[in-house]
Each structure stands twice: as structure tokens, then as C-alpha cells.
Length: 367
Image (cartoon, rainbow, N blue to C red; front, top):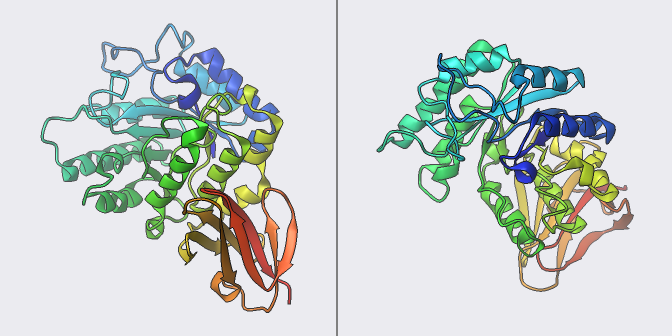
């Protein structure tokens, strides 16, 4: 859980902007809720490496340097993260880490970097195989751990394998070498009209990858609240996203201007029940269908079963599920809506959903 600069700042990040977002994480209560890592994405580094080959921060954007910035973030009780790429260049054509894995890992450790995201934007020698690319990610991860055993390693090996036979093997390899790895494309375009399709597309991307997820290694669906509210997303869109991410145990990394988040968005991001479901230690592995309505289930850490109902069909539809289908053996159960706080009792679940709508319930036996 934490914060990432990309969807709001892109490459316009500066040290003052990063410090302000870090301060806002604390003052908003997001840090206390668990969002405690501030990660800089692409655009922080200088256009060229130093004479000794080291990465350095862009002096115009970060005049006091990355160690100073890390100290400011740490002084707030937060962790500090940086971005690089596995090849010779980043997605924004800045210096990547190709040929400098050990040197960059040493540099990051000397700066007290707690989290390193390694992108896959190309920049590898022509003809590099997936097996060779996998080995590069493995080597970089080993270097990072050698110089800082506690570093969190986030990487994007599976991204360019999406839709290819090599995708699943790249996820399997990632689960062996990293703490988190991207399994879905970037969230684009960011608009209300596209939000639901994107969110459900990300759900489909990760649905059958639960065997690779577990404590210390997670399928990453990308960031939450991307550029909210300037993206045009509604509160319902944000809740839909958080519900999916929570059921799939995807890391929760906010990527917005925290100072612009309205109270209802802050409340959604800090919802303790949603966070508990996300951080419960398992990804959803059980799915039941009734017509076009999908019910995804996993144990709720606050008792009973967490169930996410999703309308995958066209138009408004009603799905009906027996309690045994939801893992409940009692004759009656209660359903607590994670977002509204409303609780109802029933002997079977009948849920009516608009197209692409979701509902997240905690279902518990009542006797």
C-alpha cells in the first residue's frame, strides 16, 4: 500500500511536489490507514548518467538530490520508492539500468530506497528472448536484495507477454523472484466512459492467476484512483475498482493528487473493511456464475465470506445464488455491504445489478 506519482504528475514530478504528497498522505489519514510508501515513477532521473556511471536525479526537478528526498519521506514515517527499467532506457527514454544492475542496486541502497519498480519498456538488445529477459529480471532482483535484503521488488516482466503463450510462465517466474508484478496493461484512457470496461478487463486478466499470489508475492493490477477526480471517474467507479483490487489482493498504490481527493474518495480509499479484504493474505480463488452475474469469493478476515458480485452482461440483470454456493451451510445469512454499511438477512441472495456494476458483501451465517 502506498502512493505513486505517475497518473497525476507523469514526468512533471519535483521534490516539492513529492514532499507535499508525502505530507498529505499523513495529514489525510491515508498513511495511518496503511498507505505508507511514496514511490516516484518515470521522470525522476537525469537525462544522462554521471561520469562514474551512477544514476542521478534531474537537478532541475530535485536540486537537493534523491538522498535528501528520501530523508524527508522517512522523517514523516513513510517509506521511499524509485523507478527504473530493465533495459537501456525507460518508457520516457531516460537512462535505464541495462548493464548497471549491481551499480544501481548499490546506489538505491545507499539512498535508503525501500521500494524499487523495474519497468519493461524495451531497450534490450534485438532478439532478446523471453527466457533471457526473465534472467535479467532475476539478476536485478538478486542485486537489489544483496544490497538491501528488505527492499520491495516490483517488476513488469509479464506486461509484454500478455496474450502470448509466454504470459503464464512469466507470471510464474515473477512469483519466484519479485514481491509484485504487473499482469494488466496501463489504465488508459482514463475516463468515466471507459472506467468499468477497464476495471472488469483487469479483473479478467488476473482471475485465474490466484495460485501465484500469496504473502510476499502478488499479482499487480496497477494503481488505484488513477488521476482521480480529474480523470472523470465517479465515486461508483472508484468503489468498483477498489472492490476488484481487494478481492484479487492487488497492491493498493494511489496515483492522484491527494490534495484534490474529495472526502468521499478519501473515505473509500481508507475503508477499513475493504483494506482488510485486500490485505487478507489471499487472492480470490472461487467463482460461481448465475447467468451473466459472477460471484467471486474468499474468506473475509472479519468473519464469513467476502463476495463480489459482478454484472458481466448487457443491461440490468438479476443474479440468484443459494447460500451453499457462497460457502454458507446455515439456513439463513446476513449480507453487509462494505460500501454502504447496510445489512440485510436472507435465505438466498438475489442481487440486481446495472451493466458492469459490482457489489461487495460480507456474507455471514446467522444460525
